[in-house]
Length: 245
Image (cartoon, rainbow, N blue to C red; front, side, top):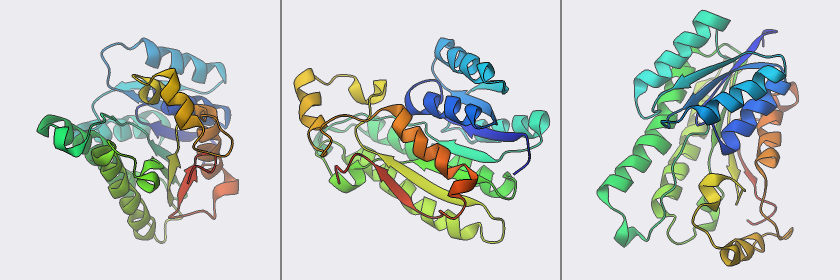
């Protein structure tokens, strides 16, 4: 990869995306921070953390479900930094319900963000990422645990895992690796919201360490995959869940 490496991270204003931005900045990446919420304060804070490492940050508001968002971010990366070396597909929603209770709107939005959104950026990366680059898609260990109420969310991530493995083969000859990281329960706003302390305690005990993971533990694996040490890992789904499954 070039000396001035560049990473696009979707859903990067909070949680795993924010932690990944800070981690990759420490590893020498300039970061394009995607977010879609109305309040830019969280994204501004992430950008400040990136710049504190000495790297550059750009904030890019946009819905990943819109193909134009991916195109615009790659355009900006090419114009300002010369290209893209890493894509972390992190943006996602998780609205839980039994299948019988899922509305068409909730189903369609999961598909639009979790699956089509990731596809939009993977498609752009397949055409425009610099040789030697890395794609890291964020999945979920629920694809393995198959917990009730996670049906639609887990289905989008299962599809993403399959696209990950197929894209890794389609990048033949370009030295681009494509992998997925599948976290278990992780202490992010997305996961913690709406869960009682009792439920969180039960969930924590599902793995042998009897605790919930941290975003930093997830991004340690992302950082490895994006580093020279991860160059021989390709087409893999890496479960990071403390041994839950």
